[in-house]
Amino acid sequence: LIVCLIGLVTLLQKMLLGVSTRIIYKATNINGYLAMLVGCGITILVQSSSITTSSLTPLVGMGVIQLEQMYPLTLGANIGTTFTAILSSLVSTKVEALQVALCHLFFNIFGILIWYPIPFMRRIPINMARMLGKTTRIWRGFPLVYILVIFFVIPGILLGISAFFTQDSVGFTVLGSFVVIAVVGGIIYSVFWWRYRDGKAKCVTCMEQRQRRKITFQHLPDDMDYLKSEIAKLKDHTGLPDEEEDKDVEKGTDEFEAEE
Image (cartoon, rainbow, N blue to C red; front, top):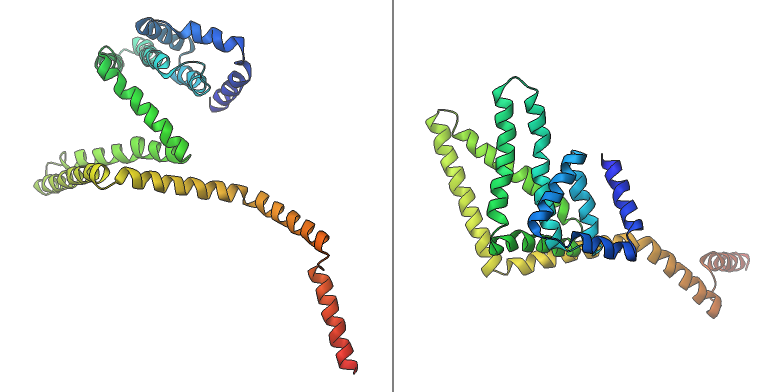
C-alpha cells in the first residue's frame, strides 16, 4: 500500500501541469455537502480512505485545490471508510460486530455535525491544519514528533490513567488521582508558559535552529568540496607550494645541514 501511494503521488505531481490543474480546480470547486458525497463515493469504490486523502494531500500542496475544498472531501472519505466495516459485520452472526461498525459510522457522523455545519467551528480544524503546515516548513522533523505524541504518547497516558481506576483498589485509585492532578497541572503550566512566558517564540527558535543544523550537515560535503576547489585555485594563482612539496623542501634542507 505504501509503495502504491508513493507511486500515485509521484504520478500526480508529474501529470498535473497546465490545463489539467485548472480543470481539477474547477471540478472540485463545488458545494461542501456535495463534496462530502463525492468523497464518500470515491472511498466506497476504492475501499480505503487513505487512498483518497493521500491523493488529495499533494494536490493541496501543489496549489491545485484549496484546503477549504479538500476539507469536505476528507470528511466524506471518513464516512465512506465505515462502509467496509459495515459490510464485514453483515456477514457475521454476532450482534457485537454490527454494533462496532455502527459506532464507527455514527462517531464520524457526529464529528461532522460538530465541526462542519457551523462556519466558526469549520474554521478551527482548517486553521489548525494551516498552523501544522507552517510549523512543518520551519522544521521538517515536526510531523514525526506530532505523530508520536498524538497517536502514541497521549493515548498511552490516557490508557494508563484509566487503568488505575479499573483495578478495584483504593491504592491504585489514589495514585490515579495524583496522576490526574499532575497531568492537569502540567497542561495548565504548559498553556501559561506558551502564552505568557514566550513559549511559542522559544519553540519556533528551537525548531529553526534544528532545521539550520540539519541543512548545514546535508550541505557540508558539497561545501567542503567547494572550499577545496577554491583553495586549489588560490594556490595555482599565487604559486603557493603544496604540503608535499613543503615537506620535500624541509627534508632536503635538513639533509644539507646534516652533511655540513
